[in-house]
Image 1 (cartoon, helix red, strand yellow):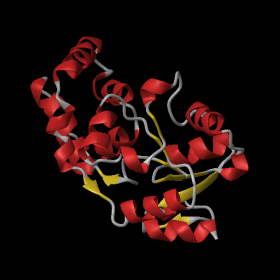
Image 2 (tube, one colour; image 1 turned 180 degrees about the vertical axis):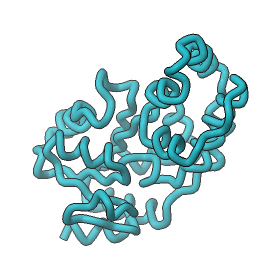
Image 3 (cartoon, rainbow, N blue to C red; image 1 turned 180 degrees about the horizontal axis):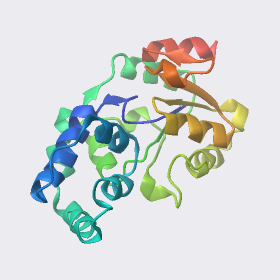
Image 4 (tube, rainbow, N blue to C red; image 1 turned 90 degrees about the horizontal axis):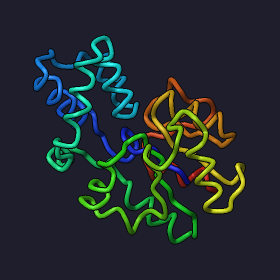
Length: 200
């Protein structure tokens, strides 16, 4: 079972808004629009900064230079864990099912895992730092399948965005849409415990 992070494990819109608005304010830029927030929410931080500042290369460089000075732990407390996540993960663990995270987050992921004590609930975490090509490229899922020695038809990817769906499709694994019917083909859930029905 492979999970996206933002929008699946956590409601993180408030965090992403605060994080990127912090960078925007420090560079004299206006706050994010709703359209910009939707973009940065599902892309890597480097893709997001290029999207926000790419029309001015010097400003984009300044934004990138600021990243090491931004403490991700300052924003993580605003994450809101999705309902019934932990009970569902425990049931999967008892059933002997591998649980992995596949996210376009980078350095902030380790702090999230520590703050919410998620390490015991997952067997593997793949971030944008662990692959050459982040989502929607299939490399991340292919890496997970290789590590666990499982076939494509034995894996499921749970995501909430078009990028997640493209990742699953390109890797050839089943996709389950979480709280987003617009990207759902046959499988949709709005509660983590509902995911267990697909295992039957």
